[in-house]
Image (cartoon, rainbow, N blue to C red):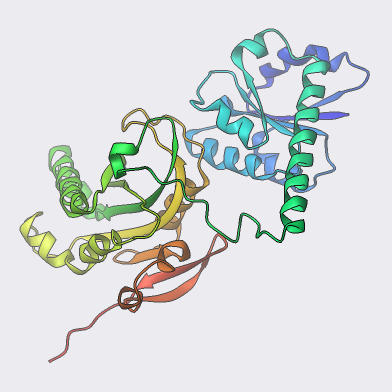
Length: 337
């Protein structure tokens, strides 16, 4: 059987001398850039391991989510710096987890065999569950959302537990010329003002800023299973750009900003202690906001749109598909007269 390790650190090989000496296993070390190509060809190896510590911050989340989505392939994450806060989340999604202590003891063939067995058991259970549901005439999990609703809103949210949130990504764009002309103090002031505006506009709808980087971040609204009314402050944010620019930023021209909303589930961690969170939903909202939504627009995913009241749905129009989701964009309104 073949083991492929994706890493940017050739020295990692020293922990796998037992595999190199094995008659039943062969070892191949590849750069992590080859991960997607190799794993698309599922017959390349019996087991794939990703060296998490050798990736930069952006590549960590991207590659981690990619490998965890490949549920038909036996895989594992090597966490030699113990950076991952929620190893159980990896195991629950079908991948093995190799910590620093396990690595130091040296990885032997028996450990890899257990990884393969774990994957096979998980796969058999998933097939069995799907067959049982089909026989009973039950819809699969994709046909009905499995919301995890905290009782009492934020009062019921506990760190380390999974919940469904309405998520708002938003950021302002500072022109390059303004960045050059302005000192760091002035730029920091703009960041603080924008954060205060977001706090003010979202708090009445039980929104709380969770992650904030540079000129924007992510706001969470605990989901009650029915209402996505928190879309309203996002709409107002876009429509009131000119007013906000004058009253809050004291500028003579409208600020440029973008916003995106998604309904998804994630493990909640106390703000400032989020660390690395494994969540397709978090990935989706950041990708939508940074890679698809233009400046001065608001996009929402179909999960949000489908729950809107009809009168609010009329404010949006379908704008395309992004990462296999239908996306709806706030209409542009012109005032005539």
